[in-house]
Amino acid sequence: MLALLSSLLLWSVFPFCSGGRYRRSAEWGADLAPGPYCASRGQPQCCTGRDDKCSVEVLGSLCYCDSFCTRTAEDCCPDYDVTCMGIAPVTKAGCRFNDHEYKPGETLRENCNVCTCKLVQPGRYDWMCSKNTCLIDSDRLNQSAEVFGWKTANYTRFWNLTFTQGINEHVGIETESRAKNMSSLHSYSRDQLPIHFDARINWTSWIHPVRDQKNCASSWAFSTVDVAADRLAIESEGLLTNQLSPQHLVSCNTGRGQRGCRGGSTEKAWWFVKRRGIITEECYPYTASDGECLDGETTCPNANSSTAKIVLYVTPPYRVRQDEEDIKAEIYRNGPVQATFRVSSDFFMYRSGVYRHTGADLGESRLSVRIIGWGERTNKKGKKRKYWICLNSWGTKWGEKGAFRIVRGENHLGIEENVLAVHADLIRSLSIHPSDRIRDQGLINIYTNKQIVVIKRPRPTEQP
Image (tube, rainbow, N blue to C red; front, side, top):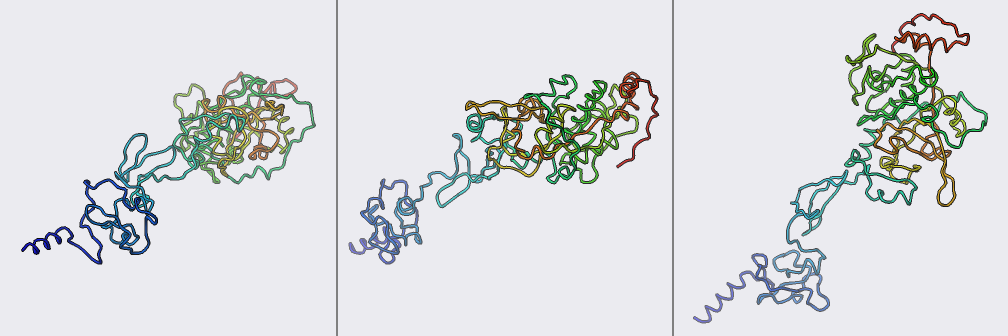
């Protein structure tokens, strides 16, 4: 009887035996004595194949440290994964970030990337993140001033945006430009030009301020109308100083591949202004959206406009030769010019200084800006650094109050290869101006004989 009880007790303690290996019906309990187990073995701590001698006593039985136990997980020693497989034990399924616990499958945003809490290997959870290039690169924020020679800033409007989103929403020039195929019409003698020149100082009240295109890829429209407005003011000697409407171009210059807030061509914009004219910002306010074209014959889209509809015109665009001195002479004699250049992700972080591309991601799309002057500065090593002064259309809270300086004389990022300019078509603009004083005084100034000349109102131009 005693022998029978002993036999039954043995089977109750060891319910499953096969080949001398103990198979637990459940995981080791919380009352398990602290290890180490496999780690306490002499070499080898872990064995290959099935080796029943590769074991450690635990709770009066054996646990195993050979690779065969991966097929019968119940008989592995508690520290098998750590010691033999190099897998950290999981005490809790999930991830942690900034002292906050996240469950498997939960997500968070890290700048422009989305991270998901996932099981990355048996027994370990971690964050798996997308790998987008962000407009605001945290690693570069504190480097540029010393390493690159210009300062950076963390702009709230660009945080969380990818480089692709930045290009799509804030740049807007098609990659293929016909400007480089245009003949250069102006080549200047090497006149002595000043070392520093800023059109805002030379023509104080005639250079129009920086504006904000917002989340609309309309730099092509802003640079076009602002260069036109600057030159109309300069050539009319202050008679025509109206701020012109980029919305007129965004909404109405929609043929031949022009895409409004998704980008456009500066050359096609200039031909639109030459043929149909451009109206004022007051008459056609900017909305940062495509919108239906509201260009009426006599009335303004803005019903609250206090002035009658004014239409201003320019001559066909011409290309300034890709030469530093020619570009300087054109600005010095006639006013700001229009230029485009390839945009890098680091440009969105520009705060001040002379910008040079730092090796960050470089896109094919181009940004269109006004070049209004030039200058040079000497660094601590005594080396001169020449630069262009440019006006962007990202508002006055970006850069140097909306302006930026960029390396001059190297065609850096292509800024000197597609420089365009126009002249004001004063006769056409003034002859239909609603103000008698401005119209008559302007026409007197145009003609060298200083006689009042009566000009008939021109016929409406053809619709493109």
